[in-house]
Image (cartoon, rainbow, N blue to C red):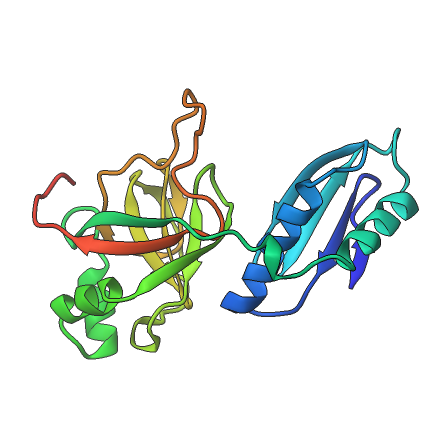
Length: 217
């Protein structure tokens, strides 16, 4: 499905839901669109199941941008899927920055150590970036850890805090408000505006959390 968003963007939806194969197709489409881009293209923003395309309305009309996209879609195949990077993230579970670890454990009828074990024993795909610069939306959580968002978000969450909500896990790159359940902290810096590559993660990356004992929080 393809539809306009305002007067300078269009959105194409390739499916629905949080699905690794669907998300790989989203990122493959981004790679394809970056190959020989059309004049007037400003930005390509992939998400879980959609690709948002910003264009210059003084150069492109919606119909022109839509036709360019339809032509590109006929050439979309697995050859445009990139090999994902694999990154390890050191994570101290609990502590001052993981204040909800005990609450999650009690809610699920397991121990805090089990929460840490279950959370760290699988790989997570970075589905999309958003909310704050460098914030990775990652999934999919083990069903034993699925929690609703907090009814009342916190006004301050420390940078580097790892959290869970729904079937996702994420890391706050900056001090900010947050409505996810805080389960730990990583010393990694996710956002450096002075760097040539300011974001630690990119959509499509594979992340593995590695428990650490040092309390830097």
